[in-house]
Image 1 (cartoon, one colour):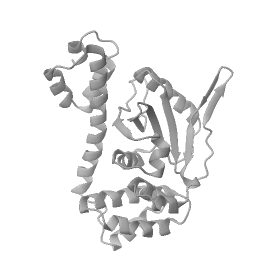
Image 2 (tube, one colour):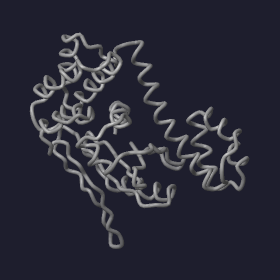
Image 3 (cartoon, one colour):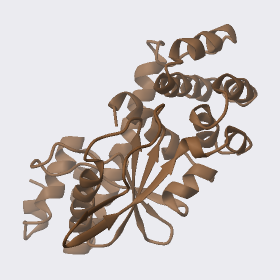
Image 4 (cartoon, helix red, strand yellow):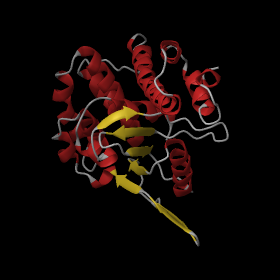
Amino acid sequence: MSQRYDVSLKALFLREGDGVIRRLLFGSKVTEHLSTEQPRISNQRADMVVRTENGSLHHVEFQASNEAGFPLRMLEYYVWLVRVHQQHVVQVVLYMGRDPLRMDQAWTSPSMNFHFQMVNLRDFDAGVLLASEDWADNALALLARGEPESALEAIVPRLRAMRSDDQSWAAGTLVLLSGILGLEEKVNGRLKELGMINVMENKVLGPMMQQKFEQGLEKGQQNMLMDQLADKFGPLPAWAMQRLQGASPGQLQSWGRNVLRSTTLEDTLT
């Protein structure tokens, strides 16, 4: 999905919640966010990969438009994820596009029948999502079945009740999501009328929130790599923990590839 929406959608589900859409996408409570970076041979990156409280892995893709050959891309993700994590991965696609959903949720050949779940946000009544206590549901109600303008007005009281920093982030998320329907200017204008800061236009809060999103994703990479190293080499010494905690996203990705071929902890973290 376009990176323009990607960060905001990830941020919606990085926060705690137990809403309608979250349960459909992940099945149960998320306990860990995992790395989504593929090896250098591929230029694709999965949108979200998480581990839930029952130990299962879930891969979620966010789609704002129909894409030719999409099932084959999901198959490529599946093969990569199973190779990395050595277990089955449940795959769910959340479609939130303006156009009717036309993508298949399976890829078949004479020797294979591969399929995944497709959740069409337009199948959900906005009122159901607005009644939820999960902010992810409330924000996505803007793209569900119903009138976006009515959904926005129903969201306003929830926005007003938020702390100022949360309110700024939430307002910015709504503006971005409304762009999928071509209503970005209208929603942005309404929020400005209400005196709510648009985080995407704020020169101070914008970079701060972007950094917060990236830090959350980086933490998931660190946790995954620590688990892989501990499984292969045993309890990690202090020097290894310090190196992992101070590593850049690029270093974490490089070390993640080293795990597959290295024979010592020292060789892995070089």
